[in-house]
Image (tube, rainbow, N blue to C red; front, side, top):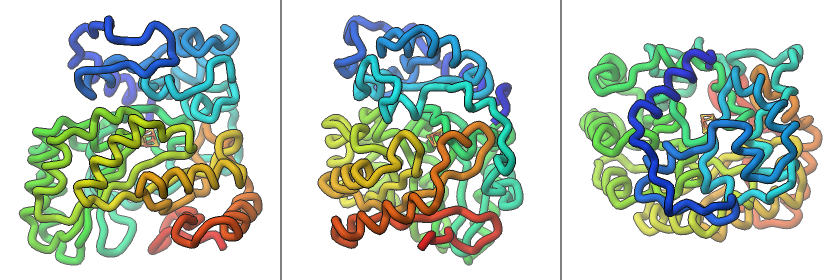
Length: 359
Ligand code: SF4
């Protein structure tokens, strides 16, 4: 996303923010802060490299190095996520997902702004269709975290609709196309939308007779588990559409007890839970890391769904893992885990009718 667009989203969040009262927050990074609402956790997220490095006891050089890349794609990390990181460890697998590095500024052949060709899949602004029977709504550009490897880090979110009125043309288009049976709410992160608006959107979708399923792709239950509140559960389960929630965790350390509690609420509401991860150099590209992630997910009743090969987006080349390495990891997982605990290792190839499985 262009820096200007991110700045606009940041401004939206900040503009909506009341001054955050912090007496409940931990003085150090190590205890997870306690917030009255998920919105408060969003407003209180760490946005400055200096603060990130201070909280995590990292040398100041990391903050200095983070300044230029964070101008292109701002740092944004909730404090609850920081609390799961090891202080003083620049290689912490959670920190690596959010810490801007100068490697992001490298120009690497083959890495482009729109690696999955979202532009070609756009039926209307904010409505994408890549696969038969399913369509995707880019509901917002806001996220609960800025993942440095994000394939939509250059997406033109400013052009996507952001209100029921603005979504109307997309809703009409979906209503006119009886071949669409499933809607994917994506973004950005659709769970950054307040419940009242989300509920309206879900009701509008549920009123379209040929739609059967509502899939929500989100990192909120991981980043800000407080987001999984009773309202959210009700709006997902009361609608006519079958809900499916796809979370996005890359490492077992992300899945602490607060996340477990949030996932248990979704699971208790009989909402199918799937996880997608991205294979990331320096973060989870080992058999042990993938084993730990898959087993923890299964313990939390989340099916490991996809392990994605990195989408080759500008700024993320340093995260890429060769597919041979990915294949070997999957082979070793097969020898150590039951089949249901092994994700499909996939790659999105623009123009293909489905994700391509890397065998
Ligand atoms: S939460 Fe998803 S959309 Fe948002 S920055 Fe991370 S990967 Fe990208």
